[in-house]
Length: 376
Ligand SMILES: [Zn+2]
Ligand SMILES: [Zn+2]
Image (cartoon, rainbow, N blue to C red; front, side):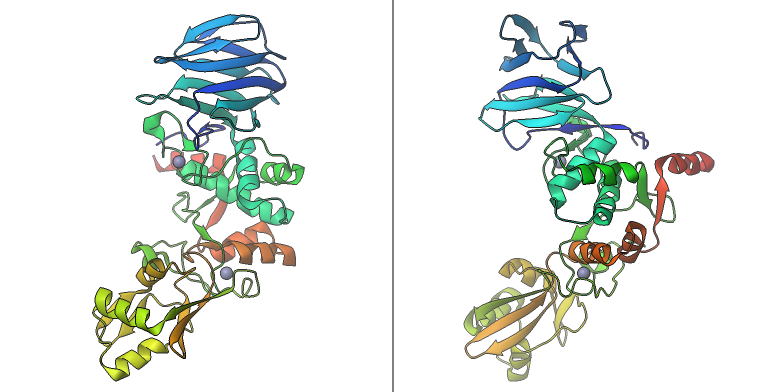
């Protein structure tokens, strides 16, 4: 178990491309450049640094001189508010700005960089909130997102441990594009500094969320077979007029019939059963489409027809059927559009989180450590 009070985190950056040549420069503050643990220069401020892969190492040079070949280059921030610019030259990509430190090495068994941003946790959280929720929400919603991002980061701290860093910068972990630009988001992250969501056993919760639950969230066990005291179905009236509250999808009766018969051995030749399959409704969230003893998981219908959710009714329209659906996403945990609406209506981030996640406590990381110590 990694230290749970981590104040910095190692994020692999530019992991969506495979950079082999990059340019790094100081954006603000003073830096020291280290090659395999040795200082390579005086403090850096205006230098443009070009780094390429060579064999198993990386080669660094400035405009003026070659700095040498190293296994690891470490651009170390010497002040609290240091930031640097990073641009991939091959393949070509726009410049991004990151806070704090950068580690450059060659990725093991691959001819590409492993670029790690060793960054202050709160700066990382703010960057993720900006990358994942854009800049149109309210301050209170950003606080909700900040707590979720921080809780997730610590919950998943060891996700890429075997590869030498904590999290990647893609949606596989949490999208992160570097230094936050929106001041409001930076403030939301700082104003909830060190706060995380835990269950009644003081364990970090799984901060799963969906875009819109359609009016009712889903029990964790109903979707994933694994119960959680926090991920319980709740009726949600906050999202039902939001953009992803409703959807429709039409397919031919023929396709529906073939699908039910071939994939699920549904009795399509029984007129009562088939007429039910053409017109059935789902008032509250169900897990299965059921006919007598046959149970077809709604999640398999969702994935086979690429529907937005499992919360749909079926209605016949001439020679077609229409899936009349609600919500967008798996429906477990926090409903983003509902939470956004609650924030707009004046609910606090604590009320919003406790509405969507049951039996949770918001605690400071220090107190988590305290309770852990108490257990030993
Ligand atoms: Zn990842
Ligand atoms: Zn909802």
